[in-house]
Amino acid sequence: MMFKRAERKKAKLRLAILGPSGAGKTYSALKIAMGMGGRIAMIDSERGSGELYAHLCDYDVCGLVPPFTPEKYIDAIHEAERAGYAVIIIDSLSHAWSGTGGLLEDVDKRKGQGNDFAAWRTVTPRHNALVDAMLSSPCHIIGTMRTKQEHVLVDEVRNGKTVKVPKKVGLQPVQRDGLEYEFTVVLDVDLERHMASASKDRTSLFDGQFFTPTEDTGKALIAWLDAGIDVPDVPTHAPLDLDAIKQAIQGIGREADLVPYLTGLAIPKDHPSRPAVVAMYEARRKALAITGDVPPPKAPQPMSDGQRRAIMAHYKGATRDDRLADMSSFLNRRVNSFTELTAEEAHAFLEDVKESENA
Image (cartoon, rainbow, N blue to C red):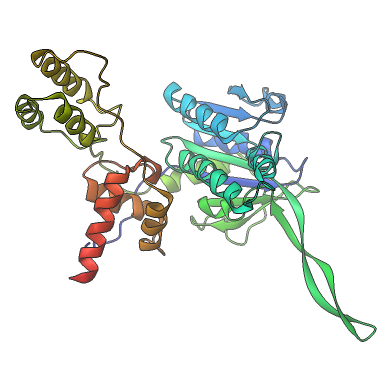
């Protein structure tokens, strides 16, 4: 662990637009995206309403239909990334939470089976995967969320007795609590005037303002995002010592040792050196006259929930960008999301933390 001088880096937009139905969330998202420039993709779960604004500009739509699972959103995000879009509008993120087939519906199906906590234990990783897909995307992300009136129960004295009564505490997004805080900017759009104000703004561009989102809003945001320094690319995967692996494989004299060795390497499926290692494996099998169907090296196991909690506890108080930068430095490869970590990598990191604390 080491400290370094803070530098603001170029970044991608993570913008949330909140408001009730009819407030103008989709329109506002498109106007902002137009000002940012580049090709626009819209992931539409609002039954085709995203195409009502085709007269504003050229943009492409991917329509989602029920069930609105997080996996559908993730697949659409990755497809837009592969297609080279600059801005992805997700309209609306609320369906992944409370829509047909969304996470709340999945929780309700699992509850009442003896352990209600287990229902959330299954659903939470799926929610986290969607969040990570948005935050790690190389595209600008604009997500819309519906809002609803939130109530809390408060104590009130009536006729000499203290009773619980509901009290309005404002509008809350229809999504899991705290999701809005993952975004760089959160704009609340009102229903009557379609005016926006920022409830969260790391850019300080909209402090104390009430405004109508326009293309100028997008231009201001892109100027702020591009004002930082360039972030150098680091290898997506740590390089493998193929000579050492080949020497080790050739020194293995029986099948019982060959398979565990290759499995222990834990080479990701998309690692550029994986085909070469598999070829070495097959050649050694042939040399040993091994018969039968022996599987190639297995993909690594993902880190456990316990490892994830321990890592997040270690990084408590740090920004997401700082967490990922530190983990990338430790693993010597680019880490776009903690969901990429293998159990072996997480174990190595936590052991390093333990050693540092005991030093």
